[in-house]
Length: 258
Image 1 (cartoon, one colour):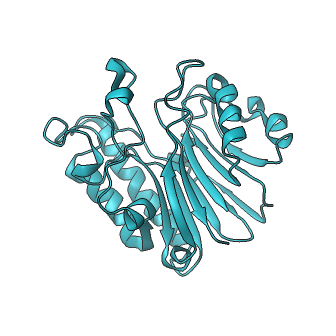
Image 2 (spheres, helix red, strand yellow):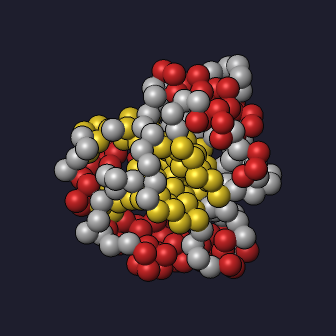
């Protein structure tokens, strides 16, 4: 069973590339972020034709998340259950026969002290409450998405250059660590503790070809699900396409024996 997370940076712009990738690597559960399109315009029929059922929580122009699965959903949660935070469509969760899958697109934030900086930290805090209110670490849970935080210095190409910038500030890293402390294990670091692997590269300056990126997209698993984890990888094929223009992220794929 393959579970993938992929920030597509516009489903409209990346649809053809996404389906080309799925022909190469037909994952079972696909979690998308940054759809930038209202739910009514999501390509449900295209996914159905490929064997996927999709649940979408989206808005026009910004944000938006979706989970597309070859397995049936028995329960769906859209948003955090908090109107203040659910104005931005950033969280969706589904119960599959094998596990819960939670897909998140965390705020990007901004420089320290700005309104967006504080909103990012507040969103993380509200997300922790959402976890405690709805789930238990004793369940099979796969938490995936774009967290907009590089957890460690080895998750960025130049720790000194990027020190205390957006995505590496201590406050942001602490917010992400609290999510792990709730009951999650970083699947990639569990299997590959020392490997340098990024998931996002700026469009400017050919950064992907120089491998100057950041690891900000993750697959986290609870302890009960960890025993089923077999592999995890970042598929560079979609990111290194020249046409059509790719997302600035690459998909991360977890392989489970379930």
